[in-house]
Length: 99
Image 1: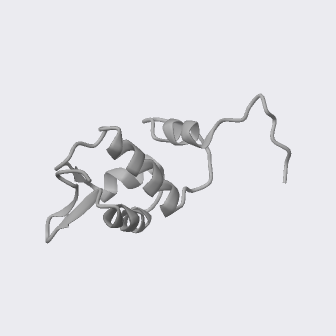
Image 2: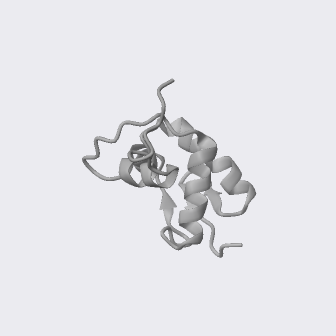
């Protein structure tokens, strides 16, 4: 393993932000479902995703640079927290109202 140069180090949040930008060339390891769930929970609580808004797996997968099944797994803890809800045959939506 190579030592980290502190001048080049960025936080996990900065990597997520950079990786989510269109045209980004940020090279990073794939995020895990729990990391994505944590980020999505923070974004939902911050109001970035409004109650009642549909969360599209494909769009989220592209944003985080992962496959849609990783997004599907990330939704499990969000459901448990009551932040998202399934609508049969339609998709996953931000809970309305939020807990």
